[in-house]
Length: 99
Image (tube, rainbow, N blue to C red; front, side, top):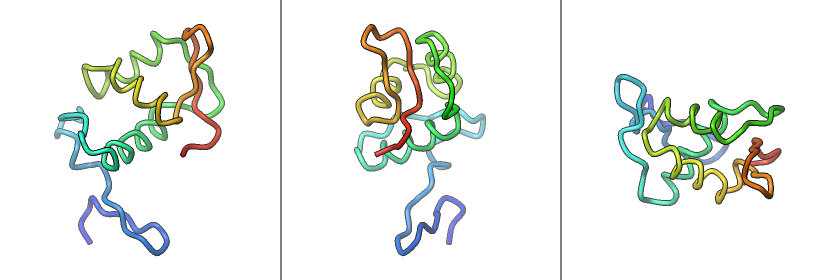
């Protein structure tokens, strides 16, 4: 099994290490929904604490550490249900359960 493959119960899914450059930056946001979902789960688990609220500038700063299009990543995280956003759009939290 390669380094970018992970055993999850009875199914095998590819990891996301191949999406990142040697410097730790995201090479590109995946176009395929399933692959993008894997990336979003990874970003949620590695960048956002479960018990903390974030302002939009804080979310942007965290996402900018991996890719310059922080707005697209933020939007994908919210649409996929990994981050929740306050009604006014000023605050974000990691969702209690990811879809």
